Image (cartoon, rainbow, N blue to C red; front, side, top):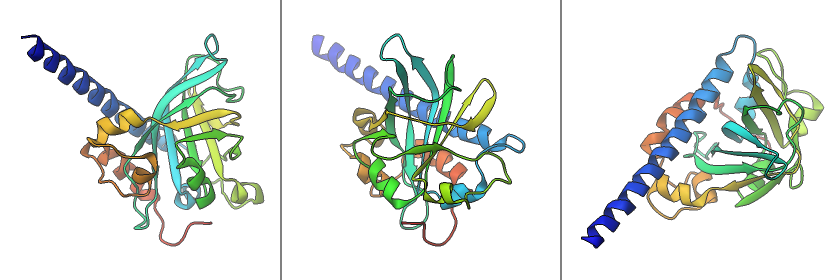
Length: 225
């Protein structure tokens, strides 16, 4: 009887974890859709076409009373050799400074990784924004362009949306790391952050809407090194 109850509890916890991970992927999909659907706002098309990876963190929470920074869970996906998108890797963002816009309630965070150098750095199990690579506030608006010297050489462009305002935001000292246990729950096996982002793991059914949403921003040709 005890063994049966233990098995039931384990299965219930696993089912709950899976449900939470699916909710995270769905929330990330909706955040990206809403940002790009805003009239004359959003990330410029050419920036997303040149991007190597994107990181989406819905509902980043301010946690000054704990660590003097922020905390959030989101997803990261990268363009693969076939110019599609990899399955999403579950990630966490913790601590650091996110600029003046983040100060009350919850904020959606979007990072656009602009070249292979930045992508390689973010494929580490743990990465510090502003330390391992700078994350500068990106341009906003359909007509804005990445063809300025600063944006062309940036490894990561960062954005936040809070209280209806979407803008580029500066990030310093924030840690982005893989959420290994959640990746195991999503993919049903022991996989690494790098394996997922390099497209070596099959995309789970729960992520197909997210990748379909990102698909229009794939452009033929090589990204910058």
